[in-house]
Length: 303
Image 1 (cartoon, one colour):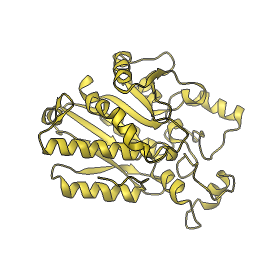
Image 2 (cartoon, one colour):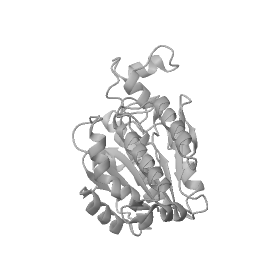
Image 3 (cartoon, helix red, strand yellow):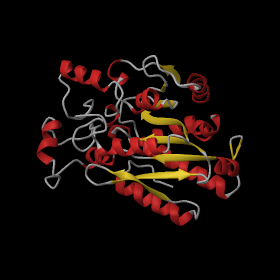
């Protein structure tokens, strides 16, 4: 199990490698590579022959990287329950393994996390450009974007043209957050994820995108709501105590949840976990996970 610390891409790989040694049924692969060629691991829990799956995505934003820790706790608890024939709440772990696949991407934005935790130096091929994007500050503790200043959760093809107009009106440029990129899926991280979803769209029943903070659930995109979404959102709210909310202002455009709802007609839910100001204290991982753990194990069988 991971230590209670903020994790880099290298740390994540070491933890996953450790799990492959501990659990013979565990393995992982890669969704793709980041802009700076860092691998983006994807884990699939469950029998490959299962015809239905769900997807969990963490750490679009570098200041929300505790979502990686949360998803690692889910993976560890799942494997432990499976190995020891334990129940997961009211769910038989062996039944869950046989009937559903859970795809997990713990860290979609490894470059941004590296910037935030360790800053950048002159060996970075984008050094001068990124320093300018960060207002010539060497402190990257508030950096949210990917390696070249694109906010990954505005890079999906969902209201992209409208958001570009908003960017022009507000002077939003490449930087720490909010900038959507030159075109939808311009960033390799988002492109890889969208391609994975397209390839597996017949089996993917629902998606949870983990973010922080606010203890809110977003499940709509404009006036579009996929079948079952409202009912499932109400179940999520009851399980977690999070409130159902409607995105406002810049949060209405270009997000993974928006794209899944508008373009793929897949029920999708953004969970804004925890309270406070980003980045949340790493110590909050325990309380956040305790609050949403039942949901993460139950979500696959809601479809």
